[in-house]
Length: 228
Image 1 (cartoon, helix red, strand yellow):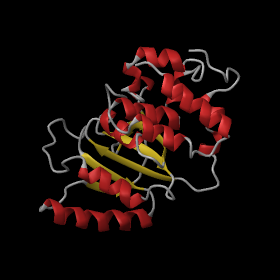
Image 2: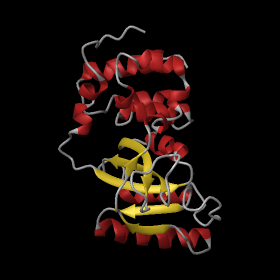
Image 3: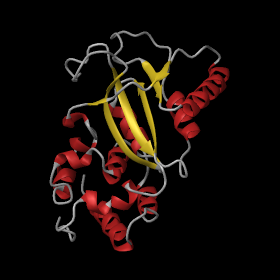
């Protein structure tokens, strides 16, 4: 597919989303294998960035093959005027069982890192709410954020990268594969191919993004014509 904005990369097009005057918030959590949760949250309006990596342990410079005592973790940046921290927490607890056996050590445990004391208070309040619904004590490990190491590039936007035809169509917009990692558009595509969102919902959201109308139309047209 010929890209009309050949002189622009996705980083330039999304500049308004990533440098908004609104203060974006961070959420860092583990809920099993990190590929699925990144797609789930990447498909949610208001989530600006997603990335996968490792957190919660002491091993220096963890990798996928040598993560030591770390946990597979997702980190998102989101706009609290579109999606609240409470909404993120509910999505987290409603979509995994937090008390399952740790059959692979700490790799897949239920983990939540809060970044501020206000976040901590919200976590504890929503935890009580979810315990009442679950009917048992939630065993999610809740601790202050202590660091995050991004996983290797091949793990970022994992499901999108399983569609080589789509990547070919995105090549001019993403001349460097690493640009996929912090891209809002790539996060939505990664969620879409995993079943989160519809063509109409993605197009409608892009039309509301903080960017020039011509850029919105370009992304909508590109998305609409993509072959999977």
